[in-house]
Image (cartoon, rainbow, N blue to C red; front, top):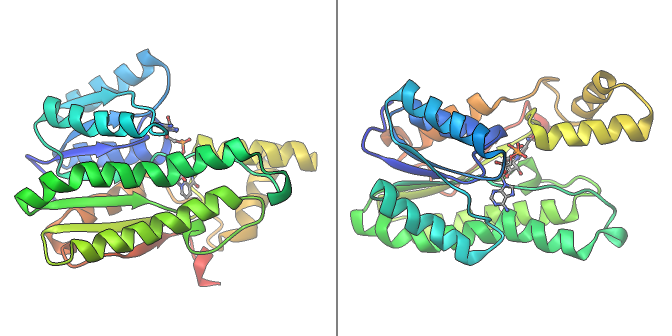
Length: 261
Ligand code: NAD
């Protein structure tokens, strides 16, 4: 599956799932705008390695997606630097866990801003150019938590349910066009975001990290195995292909049968 001549923006692509998606898109021939936080030298090394390995253009924009103006600057900057935006992957996300009654209001606001509102803003800024060319792909990285809940994740679950709602509305509004919008719903993927939850569990339960990892995955994911950023990346590339042109408004689980229960 080739995506030569396509330009992709992948938010939150300096780490984890977003990096896996960015690499998969670059290996399919797309030029990529990376985004996210992290050590400048490490990000530059990733950027250069992707360019060298896949012979595509790769740029980096450090926009903080909690700020709507920064989201606009990310889309504008990509259009200026790489010429256009054909593929938008809204992946950046943050997590915080606490019972509702002690959930800090500022964490609620931050999670809603990054995990939900940023996708609204990037979509509204990018859609005009996609509709003008009558081709585009918007992929929102939601979660199983966009479809079911877990305790202590009020903001995350609310934001991810909202993101799936946004996905459906955008899919309906673009249905007669060449633009599609879908959501991917990963279960557990071993990334820094999940490693922090494993480490917290180990501390709370007074167990070692390996036991905490087995306990975390055993509670929810019947395959007892993590999905990988590479697998999510491959699904994004498929959603960008012509074969996926009529997959619209879907929320696609990659969850080791979490949602089958
Ligand atoms: P991660 O922590 O490894 O990566 C998150 C990325 O988002 C990083 O590049 C980070 O710099 C970036 N980011 C965070 N806040 C940002 C901001 N304000 N502005 C710009 N970039 C920002 O996490 P991950 O596990 O790879 O998660 C990626 C996405 O996948 C998230 O939306 C997450 O909710 C979702 N997800 C993850 C899992 C999992 O098990 N890891 C499961 C389901 C869904």
